[in-house]
Image 1: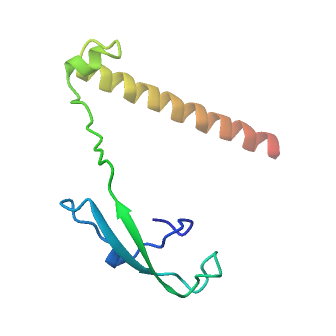
Image 2: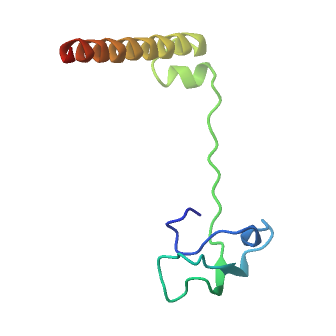
Length: 102
């Protein structure tokens, strides 16, 4: 969790995939945004409701065809060309802006 989370993260907040419920302990930082619990120990209950994993599709010809490309190699070439064009456009725009400033 980041510093804006309600419950601070710590090494003791690790989680075992085999557990679905647990009590977790933490110590709130002294400069915690909620002054009433800043610097104090806390215990909170955690229940894992669902675990999701994002699975990316294979970069194969079927994937390429779903984007209208002939095959995976043609898709790579098209993406590379698009990225190079975008880079050139950005560089030209920055150069034009820089020239106008001088």
